[in-house]
Length: 340
Image (cartoon, rainbow, N blue to C red; front, side):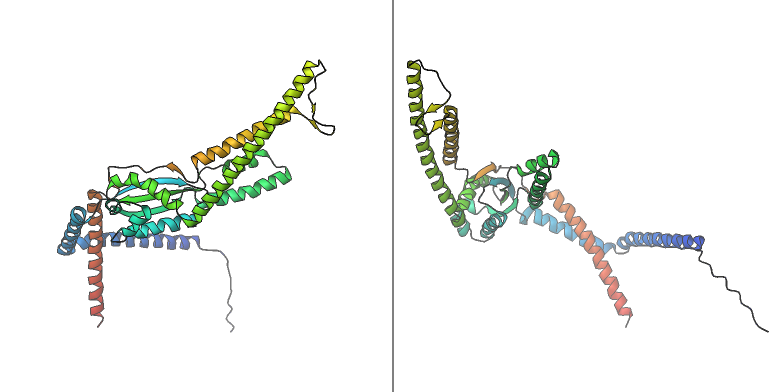
């Protein structure tokens, strides 16, 4: 007799079974969390002596460090701008100062910044970071490409205006320099000292000198061109006056020769442009905007380090963490001993 088997395959999913498994998983995770919290709560009561000893010791160390070992330091920041500075040069220069400040003897820092020994001894550190983040500089370059595309395809003016706003970001060559000292009275003396330290850098010093020479030569040339235009204006004025005296018909053009016709308005406009350029050159020579202090150091009366209350709080948290780690290690050690 043949046994007939009927196969009824089905692709249907038992939703109830799936939901039951999900519920069991959630319940298991919840029970596991409750057991863990119960363990965390039970451990300090079962190991009172260990917990009290470790926490009291940690707080005592925190108090000792706060009142006897820790030195209060004062922190201030300046923003220095210069077209000669880039990220690598600024970081390299300030890192050297930071290394000199970290030396036990501050002879190197005294010489580098041209400070008195009593001032240099109070400096404990320097830091520098770009005032404008690199991502902003990258964004500017991307927007420049968008501007070129917008000009080529005659796109809307919104993209072009956005590019212009980003390109005109001020202080793209500015850096934020932070100094830490043990005495806040030192801070005002460091501003000019740091600027002079940058100026004496050989790379920067050469560029300052050549740019000044270029400005001086440009000043001489502009002054000479302005004098020549002044002479030309006098000749034109005399020519017009002579024409007026002879009661001849006036003209907007003055014939200076048989081949050249000159508009006097153009002469005066060019003279104004040259004079504006000369003023700009003289302003740069006087101000010497090689390094500009956007925001100087400020002498603060309150230390920048963590307060005593914060130190005690940190000591308490560290003590509790060490106590739990100690209990866990001792429990793990007993487990290993039972395996023998």
